[in-house]
Amino acid sequence: MSRKDRTYIDRELIAGLVYNEEAYIKEFADASEDSFTEFKTNYRKYLLKRDETNFRKAGHKIKPVAQMLEIDEIVQEYEHAKTLLWDEKPVEKLEQSVEKIEGICNEIIRELKQIQENPSG
Image (cartoon, rainbow, N blue to C red; front, side):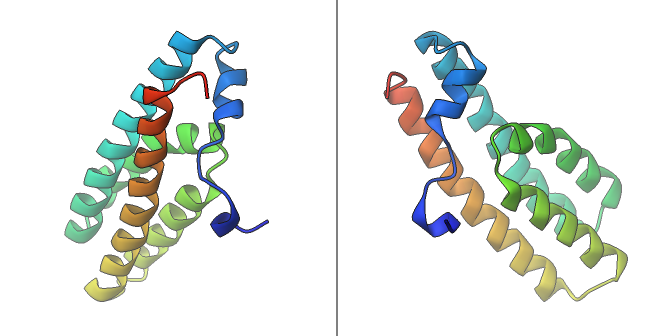
């Protein structure tokens, strides 16, 4: 099944991680929303500045969350962007990566807000 056929956030996966407690589901979704919002901001900021040190810090901070939620696209694009930096690709390539990550993160954030509004599903 392709990503277009489903959402990024699997509410049941989150529920399983937090023992199906409604309050914890809401709290997890809220914390995850904050993490993806921060990542999206830092991804743009540090990739376009070609600040590899802080870019890597941003990536290392979001990777465990993305992996826990099984959102491979975040990790894959982050790894791809590192190669863009190493290969000193033009800014247009960096901007394409930023746009891709922002699109994914915006959808993830939207889905997390829905879970916060209705944690019981």
